[in-house]
Image (tube, rainbow, N blue to C red):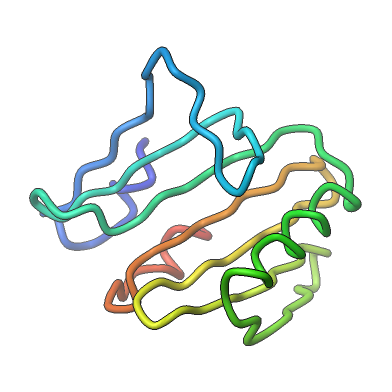
Length: 120
């Protein structure tokens, strides 16, 4: 099941980046990139970094804080850590899953209302 399938509005489509060129984000290279569109408008980008330490996660947070304003830190009961950042048009949620050592960076337009569905 695609992440876009978890969004109630069926006008969203999800695609995995399969380009031959490796795309970097703030000089970090993700293992997987998912793009979610609403019709032909890119609404969400999900970057996944596998088997990364909390130190790597904190380096990514530092790079984000140089480009956006940090607005919130959440530590959930299952240990998941979410740093939230915002600019005038885009929100960034940098999520660390300690059990699997996975980092997932989700950035989306500030008008995107289904962000919680992407975490389920």
